[in-house]
Length: 101
Image 1 (cartoon, rainbow, N blue to C red):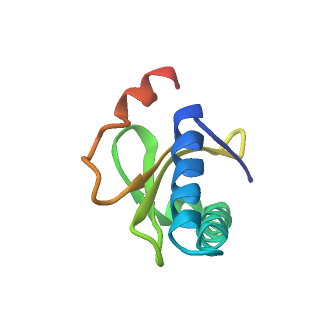
Image 2 (cartoon, one colour):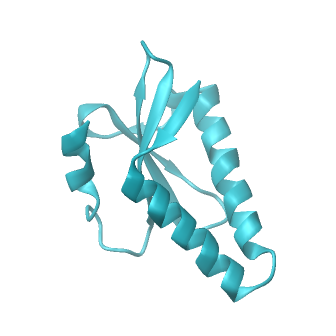
C-alpha cells in the first residue's frame, strides 16, 4: 500500500514534529517514527480501523495524543491522510479538506 498526505495534513504533521523536537532533544524524531509506524500498521490492514462516514477511518496513535484520519482506496491500494490531529484540539477543524477528495 502507498500513502500520501493532503497538504494541510502534511503541514500539521511537520509542525507537530518540530514542536516535539523543541520540547526535548530527539522527541521530534520519536514522533515521526511513531507516525510512520502507524502508517505501516494502516498498510497492513486499513479495514481494522474504526470507520467513520464516507469511507473515512481513524487510527489512534499509542504514545502521542494524536489520531490519523485517512481514507483508503482499495482499487488504488492507497491511503490519503487528511489529518494528523492532536486529540485535544477542536474536533472536525480539518473536515473541509474532504471536499477536495
